[in-house]
Length: 264
Image 1 (cartoon, helix red, strand yellow):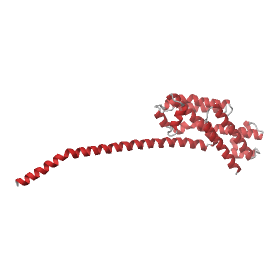
Image 2 (cartoon, helix red, strand yellow; image 1 turned 180 degrees about the horizontal axis):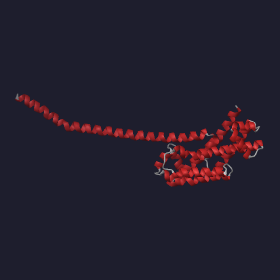
Image 3 (spheres, helix red, strand yellow; image 1 turned 180 degrees about the vertical axis):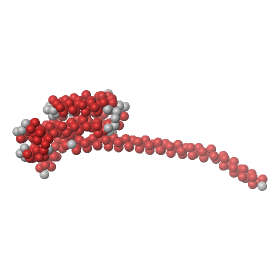
Image 4 (cartoon, one colour; image 1 turned 135 degrees about the vertical axis):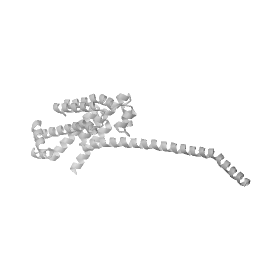
């Protein structure tokens, strides 16, 4: 009996002696798992951030492409104003900011440079107003259109803290739409001999396609005139510095692609 008790006590003592070692081993393992989980979380958050940024970047690019070459031209101009505004606020070269923006949406770009939406709006609003005023001075917008766009831009700036993406995109969409419509009316006026006021009235009542036929204009002649004028606007934007050489190349290639598709 004493022998049995001694054996049991010996085994118990041996087991108790191993407990600190087992505890240390478990602690080390837990710390290792925690480090792995933290690393995975960082990688996951980084991946989500890149995906989020690319999603919004592609969304903006799709908007530009869907609205035709002139719409994409406007998108490029506004995008460049936004990047220049971030560069001015961050005291960084705009090309550095542009490179950073390749993998980030605007929200993440602002976080990277610790810039608030309100600060961006304050910096970008006068640039947007100047863009609109330039378009008006070049005859691409009417005075009433320019005034309406300025009100929209100022409204967006006043509500910069809100998350309404659709409202924030409205000035860009309207600017692109107005310039495209005005160019089309100008081309219809020149080809038909009608005044711009008459051409605008006909388009407002019948729509673009039927207006071309009613005015007796050959559709090929209309398309060619629109393509020529669009390329001239791209060249002017490049000369003014509102778009980059790469953006101008993309736009000209798109116009040329449309020309080939029309012939096909």
